[in-house]
Length: 214
Image (cartoon, rainbow, N blue to C red):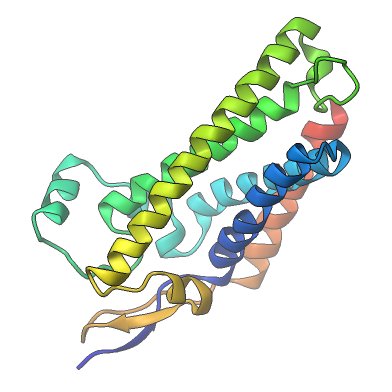
C-alpha cells in the first residue's frame, strides 16, 4: 500500500524557490541597468550557493551530493527502466542539479570580478584583476547567463515531460516536501534546526568575507 512520505527538507526547497526568484531578478536588474540591485541580488545568490554546497555535504539524505550523484551504470539502469520510482533525484536528474549549481556558481563568480566598460559598476573583487580582465569577465558573465537560461529551459521541459508523459509531478513535492511512495519506501527525517542555523551562519560569514574582506 502506498503512502505519503517526506522527500525534500525545507532548506532545500527554500533554496530552490529563492533561486527561482533571483535568476529573473538578476536578468531584470541588468536589463534595466539597476546595477546596485543587480550586485545585491548577486551577493544573495552567492550566499545561497555556498549554503547549498555545504548542505550538499551535511544536509538531509536527499539533499546530499553523495546520495544523488551516481555513476554511468546507475544512469544507464535508470534510462533502461530500472528504479523508476526513487526518493529524491533520479541518477540523471542528480547530475542536472549539479550542472545547474555549477553554472550558477560560475555565473556569480564571474560577476564578483566583473566591471562595466565605464568602470562605474564593479563586482566586489574586480580590484583584484586588471580593468581589461574585468571587462572581459563581464562579457563572459553575460555569456554564461545565456547558457544558464538555456539550461533552465531544458529543465522546465524535463519537468513538463515528467508531468505529462510519465505522470510524475515534480513541482508539488518541491513545494510541500511530500509525495506518494510505494509501500516500504521510507522518507527522510526533518532537518535539525541547529544544523540548518549553523550552515546558514557559515554561508553568511563566508559571503561577507568574500564581498567585504577583499
